[in-house]
Amino acid sequence: MGHACDHDHDTTALDAVSVRQRISEAEARCQADGERLTAPRRRVLELLIEAGEPMKAYDLIARFGEDGQAAKPPTVYRALEFLERRGLAHRIASISAYVACAEPGSDGDPLHAAAFLICDCCGATQEVTGEQALSLTRAAAAAGYVISHTTIEAHGRCPACPA
Amino acid sequence: MGHACDHDHDTTALDAVSVRQRISEAEARCQADGERLTAPRRRVLELLIEAGEPMKAYDLIARFGEDGQAAKPPTVYRALEFLERRGLAHRIASISAYVACAEPGSDGDPLHAAAFLICDCCGATQEVTGEQALSLTRAAAAAGYVISHTTIEAHGRCPACPA
DNA sequence: CGTGTGATGTTATCTCATAACACATGCGCC
DNA sequence: GGCGCATGTGTTATGAGATAACATCACACG
Ligand SMILES: [Zn+2]
Ligand SMILES: [Zn+2]
Ligand SMILES: [Zn+2]
Ligand SMILES: [Zn+2]
Image (cartoon, rainbow over all chains, first blue to last red; front, side, top):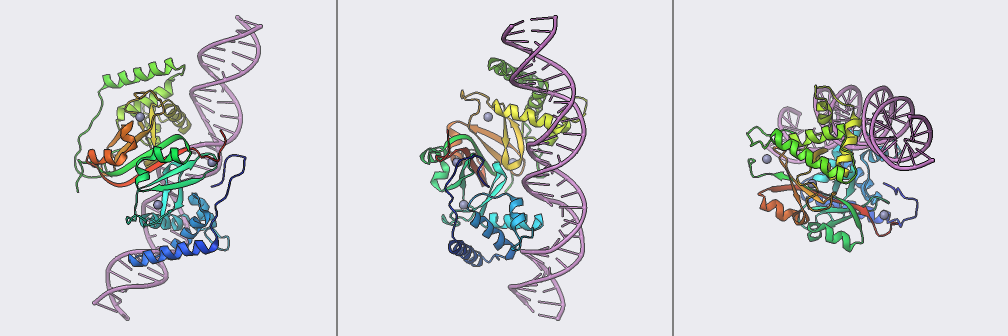
């Protein structure tokens, strides 16, 4: 997801070796948990890691085939669902995009609480985890962001609901 | 947005008098700021307040006409955009829904930071504001919620961006 | 092997949201 | 009052995001 503004930005692309390393780590993690990082899942994760920034689902669909062939939407959406379930990727609802997790499983919990700092101008997106995610405003200020809008949503079960 | 579960829940519908009162307050606030709470905007706000829970855009569209006639999508989306700009309603990105603000302008800032506790079972949605919004996890625990997933997103401008 | 579970391929469809343009309404100004 | 501009509305059409449904395939397990 490129920049909307007209000035230049530093790009923080990952080199091919690092990409493969992170995929290997994901592979190992899945195997350890008895899950299968199958070809389409691996491919979508690869695209997300290579991008190093949030990607739209239909951009993933368009780039899915190594040869330039597009995938069918369910292929990619199912892979994204898996990756999110395993804590390997995150969906960013406010921009309808998906991003590889910055530190998968770093805090033990695969589905960790994650917060994102998203620049509306250049699209630069930064994941903050752990304690920092709990005090988003402080983290944002520390990172030099000027926040125009925050979305904070918690999903779960209310006291009135079973189990 | 009704409940997905099969058991009963308390309903917290607002009576007609309270609805009109909250609309009047919104009207007054708009006039004070030199903004116009026009007919379609008023109608959408009315539907949101009456519902007392998040509503899907196309549900608003379907119920827009007093006589049962549907509106055209842009009519409702434009009204929602206005209401959100004025801090009279919020968009909840993770469920693609809209809800009337619980305390518009209570903290001086029209576009206040808001957090929502959303029950995936019954759809009950609770807005928490101010300090509480900054420590969502604590607030959720205090409210008796069991959190399965949180979305925390901050939009703004990163240090590398102009103005 | 045979069986069951989970993953994939494929088609079609659904929901959500906006672009674009013509028309109307309100308001300040000459 | 009549003009000119800014803002809001009505309407048509289309774009973008996501999923339902079902047939087929791959694989672990016994
Ligand atoms: Zn993460
Ligand atoms: Zn930026
Ligand atoms: Zn609010
Ligand atoms: Zn509930």
